[in-house]
Amino acid sequence: RLRSRKRPDADAAAIEETRAIQDAIRARREQAGSQAAATPPAAAPGAASFSAAHVQTADERQAQVLKRQFVRINARVDGALPRDMRRLESLFQALEHTLMFGGGSAVYHTARAAVEAMARHTFGWRELGQILAVYPEAYTHTPQPATLNGRRVQSVLLTPVARGMALAVEMEARRDEFKRRLVARVADAHSRFLLARGYSADDVAAVDGWHPSFDIETTPHVSPLPLPPTPPAGASAVAAFDREKLRHLIGGSRAEEQARAESKVAALPTPTDSPLLQPALAAPKERPTSSASALLERIRAKQRAKAQAAQQAPAVPPATRSMYARLPDILGAISFLYYSERKHVLPLAYVADKLCEGQGLDSAEAVQHMAQLAEFVPEWCTVDDPDPKNPGPDARLRVTRAISAQEARSRLSAKINERMGA
Image (cartoon, rainbow, N blue to C red):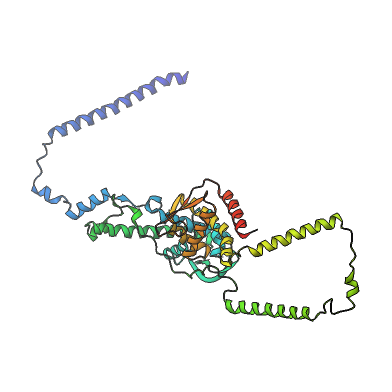
């Protein structure tokens, strides 16, 4: 009952407070309207007001126009690098991972296959030199021999340069630094492009982006760092010996052994000179021939006929035998190169350079191997030239892929065995 009696008084007080607030708001609005009506209109701007305002200079206007026209540079965007530099970036990252999981250092010829499999690009001698030219502080490289396809070749030992931290921790910073240096090379080419088009040095320093007409693919290629040269084809563990002297020693020893054997045979008595052997040879006894001995005799006859045919057939030169032995590896290298480049046709000179880097051949031998490969498996690859056996400088190597690389390898082995007389 007491609460019901007090409730009307409380409602009346709230109503009075609301009315007071509304009256105050109405009074402020009326006051603001009266002040606006009493204010005189603004006068036209005079010379003093114009002199106080900031007027842009011609250089400032030019810089503003340049900033609107140019594309913003971003080092983390792939579009800021040409195709060959993006390939170098992928190879650098793959090399970093290979060295990290390989114990911190590795020989180039040993780590090459892992880097190519991870980056899906060819990691040749030239690409290694380009990486070291862009970021020479990243690795220390020392000459070290290695074994490649059963031959001794000159390689390099790569060791990352640590700055007191593990390679796994520094990998992100090293990758960003490599990317920054690549972008700096493109920016330098862009600056030369602007200067050639008539822009001043101040304009070049003011902008921070690419000109719309600038093609990043025109950036000069990275010149590789000079590395120890690869050995010539055919180099092996006995390359240091004098081959002519070694052949002379082997031939002389064989001749002496043959002379001693002939002298021993000449010293033996003949059946006509020895009377003790005449009764034994007078009437030889005939033994019955079994089926097993007849079969053995036929097998021996076939072996003698095969050996005689091999002697009469022209012998394959050692250089040709070495070339035939390398052809399967050449086929695999060409298949991987065309897969990574995503091409069906490449200049023959370009493919020869890649084979020289990876297989230890010179240019003439690389071209000779490719011509022989095209002759053996024309269903897989052909040489586009009027004279495929002696191609010219403008020749191209076409991988038709009418058959798979595995089938081409099988046909190549069969052709080699046929030429070798196996």
